Length: 173
Image (cartoon, rainbow, N blue to C red; front, top):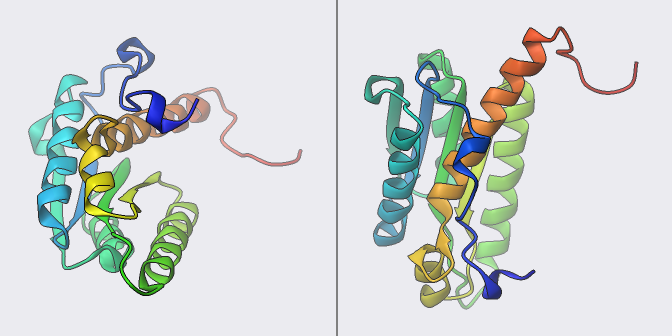
């Protein structure tokens, strides 16, 4: 089903365990601030719904989406976090600038997650215009901040469950 047909931020709350012991970082881009502030609000509301303690949420801002991976790395270095959520919005302009930024950010976030062994979540909107951004930041298609927070919680909890079961490695055996 395509995003035009449903609110993508709906999820089964009981699929996520209470997260009172998780430590979560959030890095938010200041660029397109009206959109990213709404993404942040959705992420924070979701974390609180799942009992993440306010003192266990560490939030920083960076100038733009390009700086999200570095902001996440700084948070991971400074705090003993279980996961980091990166929130941004890169709206298509007259040039291909957005493609270069989006590819670099996605690659940086993925590489940081793999290198750190901690889930680093891509919560970056890549819309063609302002309306598409608004539709995905609290509009008719939900709030990508909610989706990023639920992904962060599920991935951090999955990692914890796998480690407790003694199956901490992935790949071929």
